[in-house]
Image 1: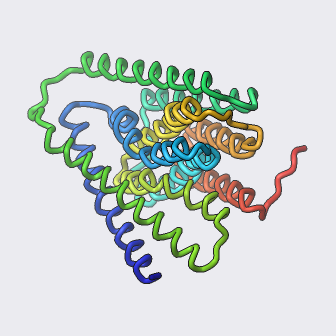
Image 2 (image 1 turned 120 degrees about the horizontal axis):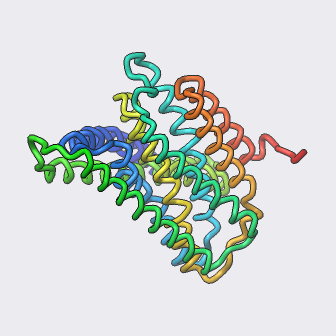
Length: 323
């Protein structure tokens, strides 16, 4: 019954909004109690959690022996994360002039984000250069993920020790539990929203190919979207950047690595060249905006324009021909 789908859609959206508020408020509380940078905490914790939908799609693709949907989801999610979510977040953050993103992004944070964007872009371009990839490349991607994650965690520990000050209250069990509960609520809300949206679209005769190419990629990015928009509105742009850069790196290494390693067939990245180039272009533009200090409304509009062009190209409305 279509009315039930609308009811589930409304429930999913409400759960997204409420759970994201719980996750962000407790995440900030943890960082303040432990003296950690919010950017690192979001790179390590939030990004891993909000990327669970992409991981679920990849696991289903492995079980079915068909990786095409998951490959499109990974690349489409990367574009949506950088171009759409950060674009909207920059606009939202610029609403209140007292919460400037320039003040939130320290040079230390920018270095972490630059490194993550660099690895994502290099990885995708190498895959496009190789044209096809299989189990060995999947294993190498997993190695890259664990090496970078170890270095990130080690850097966080050194930073924590060098700036150690005994906080007044080190008990974070409650905040940590509520943060995880909030993230799980966001993921559950995203699943409800996506599944009901697909049912509504199917009921009204929207082609299945368009649903898969747009709703699945955007739907698996809903956890990042709801968490990051609320963080941006609260003035914590470092949480937004940490989550998005971490999610893109995790998608392009861990999740893609698992998909390639456990799927018998080889992936053809030539047919995904447009998505790869849009993803890399988004990363380069975001890098440029950070370097020039244009992390405001104008930068957000530029990123949104890239996402709209990508969407029009994906739907066949806009055909981009090589020079």
